[in-house]
Amino acid sequence: MKPKRSRLSTGAGAISALIPAFMVLIVVYIGSTGWTIWISFTNSRMLPNNNFVGLRQYEQLFGNDRWLTSIHNLVIFGALFLILALALGFLLAVAIDQRVR
Image 1 (cartoon, rainbow, N blue to C red):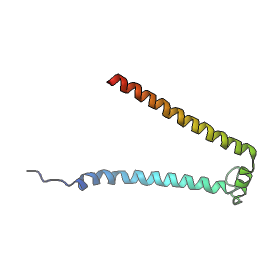
Image 2: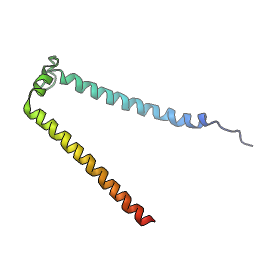
Image 3: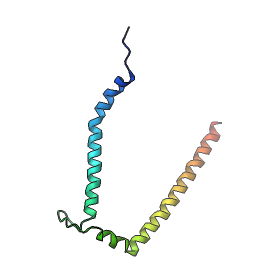
Image 4: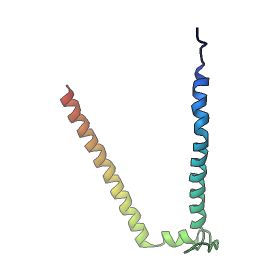
């Protein structure tokens, strides 16, 4: 008779095998996000010029009418896309359900 394996021991090998991949993923994700945030607070146009200017970049950005118009358009197009995608998905689901019955 074979000894029973606990559920913990069967999944522990898979989890321990995935830990290095998750560590690399987290380091790359957090590292690139942190670097992007740091660069956004500098007046750098080309690297390695990293003069910290704080929120001045964002003040200029949100003071620009073209930026505000583009954000407004992005919200409108995003909402329209979401509504149309959900409606189309619902209609396709209804059509598939009608054919199954």
